Image 1 (spheres, rainbow, N blue to C red):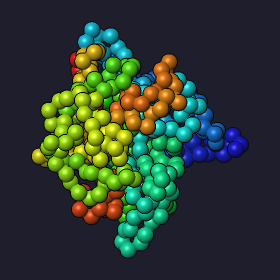
Image 2 (cartoon, rainbow, N blue to C red):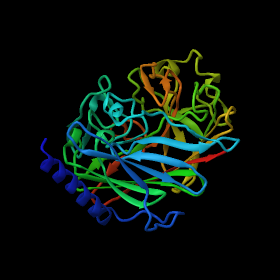
Image 3 (cartoon, helix red, strand yellow):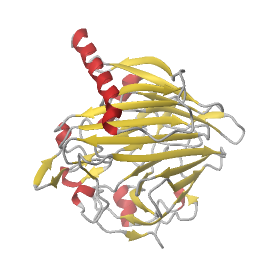
Length: 381
């Protein structure tokens, strides 16, 4: 690809980003005031098509720091204090950009157009069947073969603590209908939070389910089985052998899925249970207990060793809790080997396979509507 074509693509992304907020509206006011100063920006690599990728460093006054690239909106590192005040990186990732171009486990990425699985790699909308790529057995996972995690987003530096990313997904991309304009704002707040705000608009009826796929280890190394988790949910969505929800909402009472009071992640993960066998551990959607439309506490995870605590607050109805069951030691980064259950994910979302499950909360987005959700990862010690 010649340099002129590359520059034209980058100029188009900048223009799309500048127009996006006019299409979508604006984010709510943040606790941090936008200033003339911007996030630290450094060139970090190139895609196989020759597009430049930058890494941005967001940092608050207490030293909490997130480093994010505009390829897939990936959070490359996230440093928060332990009980002694020592900063440590608590997310899985790689040392170089080239490692993110290999077949990924979605480390730290923005996921779209549809996060999680769509069963049978198809859905019907307004009487039309849409066929999607099969990239997870017979299913579509995380938006298909080249989802939002594998796209270069246009970046706008809002302040030293905030970054805005925009991507325009064309009609028919990965089989989905409608041109979807998505904008995501990352903010490292003064309350030691990583706040993620999502906006999206479409020109045709479509489905959308955006999420963040961070892999966390609050200790920074070792496995996560001694981490203690609380999930604010009375029910979860059972799955079949292909990890697709059956459509039922099952009570967690009396099952290994009952995290209504905090317990070690590993306390029941090896029990003989059909659902645990299907997921090879926890890889399920919890139906969050909600009382309204605003931010509500979804989960809390504590690491006894480091003293770090992470709370997940969201406007979403579901939470995918995944315990790194498919990590097998073949991936290495940041001086670590990513072995089975060396990290966990808490992906806020609408439910998997919702386009094929009319009883689930809808993921339909119409041109007259705006998609808007917020998730906050709050850290303390």
